[in-house]
Image (cartoon, rainbow, N blue to C red; front, side, top):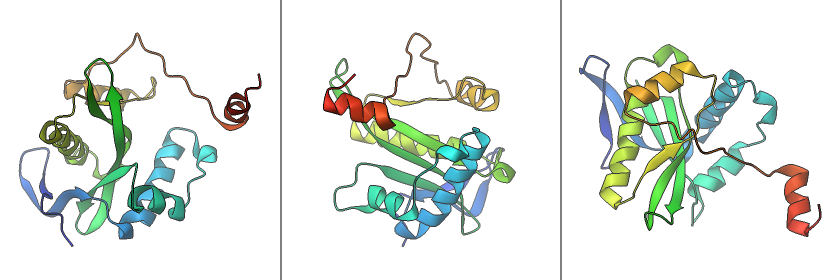
Amino acid sequence: MRWPHARRGVGARGSERVGDVIRPACPEDVPAILALVRDLAEYERALHQVEATVEQLHDALFSPDPRAYGLVAEHEGTVAGFAIWFLSFSTWLGRHGVYLEDIYVRPELRGLGYGRSLLQELARICVDRGYGRLEWAVLDWNEPALGFYRSLGAEAQEEWTVHRVRGDALKRLAAGNR
């Protein structure tokens, strides 16, 4: 089934690619998305940290009340890339925004416009729904990604430092222990 708002892909030189679309992820895409998540984690030197299963990803994206959403880039009928996102909220803006958790395009298909098309679709979602911003994090050593994002007009938020509590530290915090 095609999403009514699926957008045809546009190549790096502006030519339309027949059969290439950006569309919402569907349940059948989950195994391919998870495989790409693992590819991304391997590139980021963190494959050992991937715990997600097909079932978990399916539940996160397709439960009756999903809290995460996915887009896929389709190349000749197969998943070429994905973007997983969720709603954030800015107290300063008083509006929701989109937080892009991960975006990834298969290496052999980079430079064809899929990454840009995925981000354009997320920007359209923000604008159409009145969201105030689209934001994401990127590793400071990933210069190809940093350069790509700068080319789109993204601004690094260098004065902000991401913090994370997970695993045993999360359990200790929840229990009120130090």
